[in-house]
Amino acid sequence: MIVNSQFVLFSLVSSLFLIGSASYSFAEENSVDVVENRMVTLVGQGIDADGNDLKFQWIQLDGESVSLSSYNIAEPQFMAPDVVNGQIKVLTFQLTVTDPVGESDTDVVEIVVNPVNHDPIVSAGKDQVTYDTVNIVTLVSSAVDPDGDALTYNWEQIAGQPIELLSVHGKYLTILPQSLDFSQSNPLTFELTVEDGFGGSGSDTVSVYPLSGLISNRLIQIQTGPMQIVHEGEQVTLSATGTTANGKPITYSWVQLIGTSVALSSFNGSSVQFIAPQLPEEQEMMLSFQVSGYSPGNGWASALALVKVIPANGSPIADAGPDQSVSENVQVKLIGSGSDPDNDKIRYSWTQVSGMKVDLYEQTTFSVYFFTPNITTDSEKLVFELTVTDSQGNTGKDMASVTINTVNLPPRVSAGPDRKVIGESDVTITGVAIDPENGPLTHSWKQIAGETVSFDSTDLSISFKAPSVVSGENKRMIFQLTATDSVNQSASDQVIIIVVPENSAPIVDAGADVTADENTSLNLLCSAYDPDHDAVSFMWSSSSDEAVIKDSSSASTSVQIPSVVGNKVIAMTCTASDGRLSGSDSMKINVQNVLNLPIVADAGLDRIVNEAVKVSLDGSKSNDPEGQKLSY
Image (cartoon, rainbow, N blue to C red):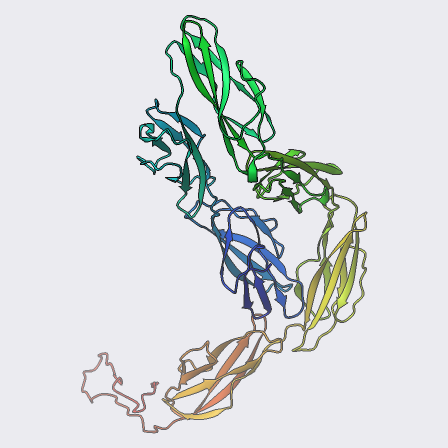
């Protein structure tokens, strides 16, 4: 059952992800709730727009570490870990799907593991009798919580003459018999309810029987032992023992006080027998018997023997399911069943009896899971036993066997990585094939798509000449390598070859020639087309060092035109490169001299000097109104 679905779209891979648990159903969401100690299935799907097979890869990102049955299949499984009541555990998994050309994308799902609360198992203790000579009676209960939760207790009287309870919230209940009316022989029944604080509870009842009229004597002591619990129709033996102050023997006599009348085997003697009566409407019944003992010189004393008769209980019937024959590394599910002739509630328990040890999951349910291991022999037999137990403690057992058979694993094949090649070039594809059992393999290549080429198909490596392609086009070819083992089991893998033309230089256009005035800024725009559709980079250069380019590596830029004395031509060159080859184009700027003023020559002032002395002439005050560089 799919428990969570989510659509994730990519540029090349359109993938549908479905993630969840085999036991629950959910709407689209990123977080999925499951319960502890149950098998969880992560269901992933990927749809490729080209119809190619996709590869799956699962990883656990966060949370308590669990082991997936496989990390590279669409639907791995794992066992949800234990969780303490009142807490949760969050496990985060990531699924990556990849297509044959390496395009991939991922999705993440959170698995929220919740605890499963179990009711406490409660016993209110054994039924008791009390006499008017007893000062205190204590009912001793026991309670076990399967989850280890802290428990609270509550006692309540539900039958018999009402009495005041001193404390009702403890594990033990204390009763003071002095407040009882011993002329009333109906039992006092108390119910104990135990709660774990998480909604789980369990109850049980216990009864106290008030009895009177017993003879007490310091010189003679008689005991009958604890109360017996028997099934209807069973033979019951009542026994009495006693001691006297002077060691004289004791003679015993028996009489029934409470319950359906039964036929005692004898009314005298230290031991008598009877058959427990049939019960009306499957209800429990209490029988009480008084034994009186007499010893010469010691006198009389008496004691009570109590017998609780419960409905006859048949043992439950277990069925562990049919024997199975499976392969290695698979999940096996044993489905058992149980029935009880008395319609008692039954509990299940699985154990492994023999064979290679495996980890059993959900051992306390009617079905159990495990994963078969690898084996070193042709087969391995595992035996499991299912035990069903009813509320009376009776059990039934049955066994089922699982035979694991060795499975021949298919070869592992790789046709090599997908790649691009140049048209009309020599191409070699080398594959790899491995047999997990190290057996012999045969190999076979075949072309399943694209322009047909010739090659030797029986070697792991094949060679051929790539077909020719024109500029701006490519050709797609697919080859498949198949390896077959000695038992005719095979596996295949494919490789994609993209044939592209030999690299061509970009075609560049630097723009048309222009005329511009000196001392102005001019915008430049270069365009380039690459026949192979490669990305290109640009670079501008100038024939004049005085021309200043703003951004020489941009296709669109500007240049500052310098001053000129006369009209001048400046060449601007744009070069485009695809990383391997480049192309260039130039445009001309016809620079116009717009300032045509005469140069001012200044040789300095006239001077009178003496003969035979060195004279320096200075023309540095000469200038060009247009700011041009002067020569002298």
